[in-house]
Image (cartoon, rainbow, N blue to C red; front, top):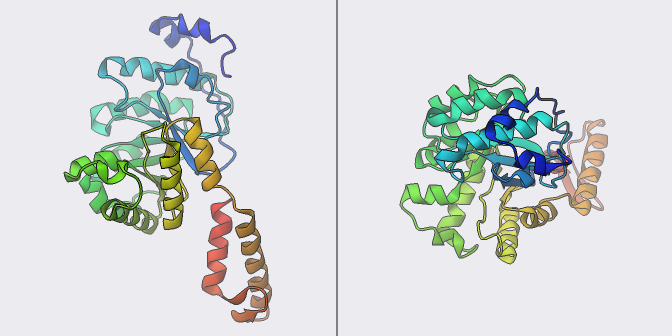
Length: 310
């Protein structure tokens, strides 16, 4: 818990909360895992107060569409207050702003001093918006994108090389379907729809080609854990390693499905060991009695496996 006496914070006026903000002290997150990315509403003080105990690899504090315009300033002050008192967290902290030219720039300026790990900008339609956001960040803060428009879906592959701080792309599939004029039932009825799966596969491959970490969409029926599990399993088959989550129950499922596979890790370690031993003898392709044929592509796949679980 960040505050032992949360009731005292809840009873404060916004001006009193603002006066209680201090300089940010948060240490960098100790890991790079991105199995689960949980959205959190900053109007819920009890949720903010658990930022130091959550099991999600990434927690996204949402200032955009879940917050009514009349309460956005309240949400921003809440984020600043809790981050300013947060000393460490096992989750990477990301702030989802409003569109960069509709309040997002001001939100980045206001919250950058409190050392979130990244800012995430929504509804991107052009590289100019990305460049505007990057121009506000320091060298240590990442930029993440919400892919929710047809322009972003079309152009994502050209955006990856803009800046090394641009690291993650999150698929906002319901917004994207609306922008494409397609019905949400393509995903709400579960895996198996060819159009939905085509969108996922294209997003995955284009994001990877652009050097970005692809995070699959949020399954908003948070009570349907079996439906969420089916999507996670299908997405893992496709090659995804990360899933947006709504609440701790979804986080637990995503962490397990996208988490380390001891058998796969051991297999990859043996492949790396045997290839590197053979490489020292200038042999880059050979038949191993236990693991079959091993060459450089097999070796690179093993390295990728170990990297994904690091």
